[in-house]
Image (cartoon, protein in one colour):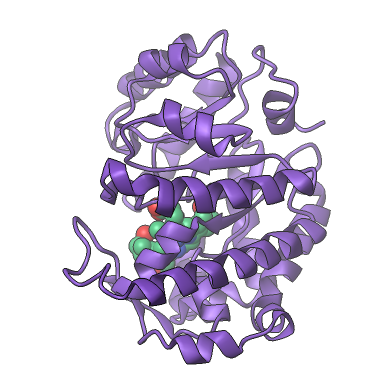
Length: 333
Ligand code: CP3
């Protein structure tokens, strides 16, 4: 069994597997080289030879325990025929949302449109570099995708004022998202994804009273679905205040914590395997500090099933040598 699955399924505490969110990305010169020649990000995600190569780039440099497929959570609205673009130094820009267009899409249209993502997963999971490593598939949580689809760009600190105005639209989109997220998950699993991570990057934007409807219930439905495929699921509800209630309600197999979570408090509150936590900005400091911070997390979770990761994606300005140092520090612990 792969180290990640040993921790998640068998609750092993004597190993410290590591992978890093956004491990394939702009901090690597070999990625920037490919990116320079491929200005269209969506097209790059849909080129299975390049996207599988990019997925494997960090594994060639560092002793990581998982490959996360180079794709994006916004491939889902793209597959539903909403326009999605990535503007340099701005982030994603989505086209107008038409319920009529989206309602026309069937399972085959969707699968055909994003098919290269599944081929890339297949290539990665069959590559010998991933022997004894996990291939992680992922999706955005329904709430985070709804945010992008209605807000049409990253919300930064708050949503558009009229975000919740059209409740019929919101409810219909949530139903459509549930259907196609399940299809997207199943296709990834059928092609070799052996763990699924659900990213809810904007869960922290909601007030407590709205969490049930937009976060807990729709994510619980997906979690149940992934479990029914016999695949472990890790949830990352970034920015929420109460991870304990989240775990008790949504019931993922493992929980990924952001860097604002107090690791000591959560190690006492939560029994399921924990992943992540360390602030990505730590990698912009020096080796002594990286070692101190990494060992802080490893010490706190010494007797807890724990997967080392950061508390959000690795920053583009990170020096790859510091990543190398981090991976070695965790492996030598
Ligand atoms: O290595 C990996 O983690 C796998 C690939 C991956 C990407 N995006 C590639 C990417 C994953 C897992 C994601 C998830 C994702 N995408 C999330 C959830 C995690 C999070 O960061 O909160 C979100 C919210 C998105 C949406 C998204 N995609 C944004 C807001 C942006 C622009 C901001 C940014 O970080 O550049 C993207 C673009 C994106 N997705 C890039 C990469 C490598 C950068 C593309 C580039 O080269 O310009």
